[in-house]
Image (cartoon, rainbow, N blue to C red; front, side, top):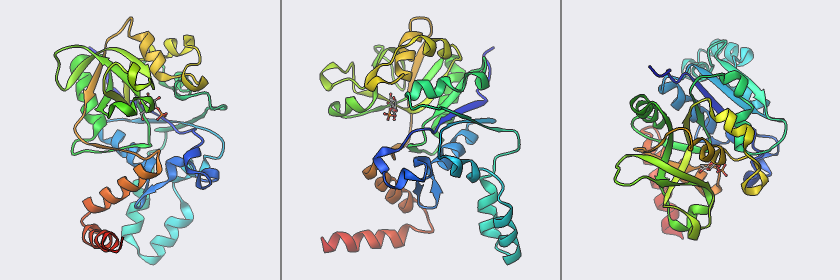
Length: 292
Ligand code: G1P
């Protein structure tokens, strides 16, 4: 019987250079889509998938992120005093249960693979999820939940996949799928950010993974790859020699909130999906478009 996926790793040590100067003093994962920071969307997705332990791989200047998931005594007292129940519920909702959240630091920005490796002593020998908060995924059934269900069926590593334009391959880990499969594809190979002419397919890895803890051994042995960083994709490529990996073409929409236009797109889309905002935002957009 395979073990349940109870732990999730959130690599949040990135410098967020695409959002400078904002990210000089705000972690990029704290950038907001409407009224929630990106990291909250990822944590809520993990909770909905049954995750019980939240491991953040942080870095310098990320204390706003730790404070966000903590109890805020002064704010709570003020809101209580004002009888502001709605806001009080919103701030209490994000507090993670005592003892379920762990922060560790990646001292140097050596890549996603290195960040995940930094969590090895916390994950130990259990299967675990990795969520990249700048990939915001809107789905009826949360993406990680879809992946946990796929994992329970195949009892192997699972990554989230999406089709991208051929010219975008150099922004993603790209997979070589096995033949003749549908929503869940067996993965035959992976390569990090290949040029379009070298890409094995148009299927890209999105920032959601369920991994066997053997990935840590693979991460120990991979050398710096693309951009001189330790790449998670390279470790996956190595582990593929010994273990099966499946790719799930999940149902849902993914927004690249690591880019400015992606963050704007997510903000508009999420606002249009919210009953408390949709009509006002729709008319603002109409007015703007008519003026241009
Ligand atoms: C990372 C991974 C890449 C993956 C992508 C998904 O790249 O290295 O394989 O496709 O996330 O967003 P990054 O976007 O951090 O450069």
